[in-house]
Amino acid sequence: MRHWCLVVATAAALALAGRAGAPGVLAGGGVIGVSTLLTAAGLGATLRRSVRLAIVLLFAKLLLLLGLVWVVFEWGLHRIDPGGFALGVTCFPVAAVWQVMGARKD
Image (tube, rainbow, N blue to C red; front, side, top):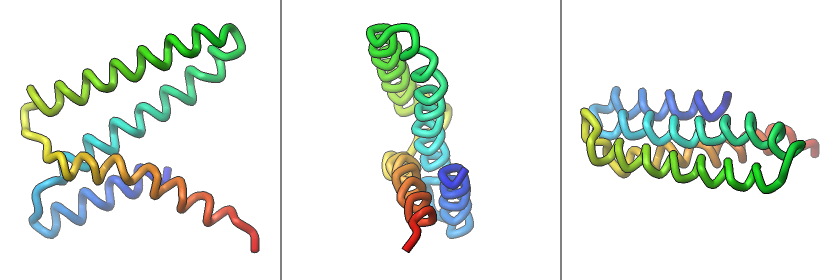
């Protein structure tokens, strides 16, 4: 949830500041978020059945996402700003660190 909040807040801040890149932030955050959701949903069920099947599915997911990213950059209706895309992807590790720091007990 923190990831999605960071993505929306970053895109909104860029849009309010009049900067380009908000669609890129949404695209990058969406790609890494969907990738994580697919991994979490598929990995547990697949590992119970077969490790080989899990590896094949994760590799297929990686190829699919790389293909989708290429399509977004090449044929998208709007040209996606690569810097904004990278910023959107970066929201995920920031959210992970934020989650861990919030869970720490000193």
